[in-house]
Image (cartoon, helix red, strand yellow):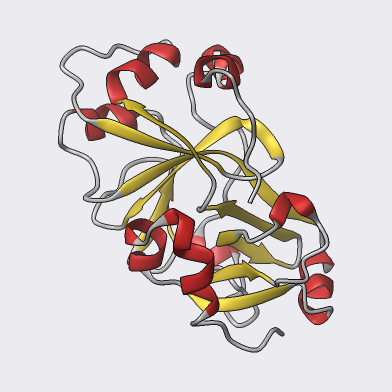
Length: 209
């Protein structure tokens, strides 16, 4: 499966240096999303017949889905793993005492200059959206510092960019068989081998809406 060809992660995220936040996309509060119709607790798994090459074999974590559209993050497009201190330095942040490694993913084709931290729900601060009590998304850049000081979530991944749909667009793609849905599972989100995640997720697929 082709992945984005990026010579340098530093070049890829350089535009983020201009912003004190990882992301400029407004995420909704959980109560803003109608739970009866929302797929926000699901994974989308691209059908083998997916016609859009940007989403070939993609596995996507749904963050928001309501009458205004949908926002989701691709979780099986790893770009690079690098020291957390180097990532914070690239973002123009203090990296004093930062340890550990950061997994960086291409989260989708929309606004690849903005970032999200997908993480276990044991962590919460301003800018955190709890998806289902097990997986959450935080947009506050301070989470990177907390992770680097071993005070952050137990599990996490960093994604730049997202997948977005307008009103009714995702529903149409589901009806045409472009996607399968899979109940969100932290093991799939964080632990599974990224090269095998699509195959593993397909084994858990449900009938599209």
